[in-house]
View 1 (cartoon, rainbow, N blue to C red):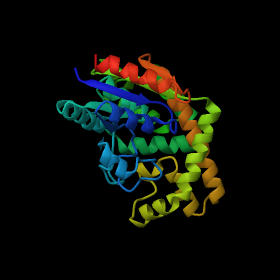
View 2: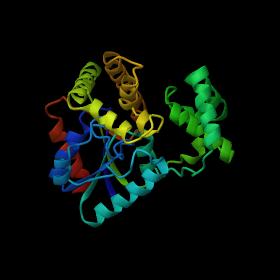
View 3: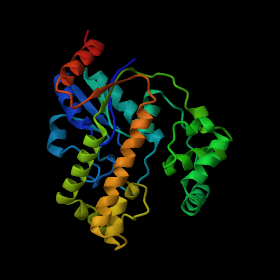
View 4: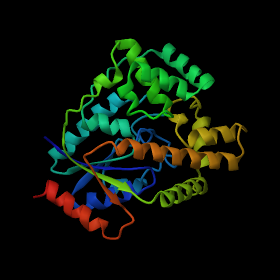
Length: 303
């Protein structure tokens, strides 16, 4: 069973910074568990670690797809599993970092997600969500698969629709495919901080994204012909800036919406991760926390 160090928590909490520190300390390589960092050209809005840092500490599953290509839980499982084997074979420590909750869960607990699609049904469900709201679809899913609803937030339209799509195609509940068979020798590090501090960090990050050329990045993606309806372009930040460029929002409104939607996403991430009993939580603002984390990692993997 391969070792796997996981660093999880809400967006902007400081996962990448800790990951880089631990990778240097314990001869590790980083695997991104971010469903949007896989896309080329989407750098500022997904808060990718700078390229020069990635050359110093090897990062995996970043810039592997064009924004037009589909990425799925199943694909992430396949790619990340191979990277863990490869890193382990070179006597290095695989460090999985990210906040894409379902992706991480599916990898570590070896979910068997079926490769089935019904694009017409999916499109119909999105139209229903737009007309009647997420809660309507969420209640419909709950009537079919209440266990799935325990792990899917009412505002997570994509996951609600995916669960309904799988149910329609397989006649089986989405939760039936999520049997927890632990696949790796894991240590889960969960990072948190006081909520108001986190929100301030999120707001600061968004302001820095705008200063660093985020609008130009989105404009360039649209110029290349990447349709705003693509899954990649529906990511938080990108969809709001697209709306600004299409004159549907003012810049001030777009920035406000990015901050608001990112804060809501952070809340959903925390709710999801709080359900995982294996996670050891740390307030990353505590000055003594780094020593405790180092001791924990050393004790787990380097006895």
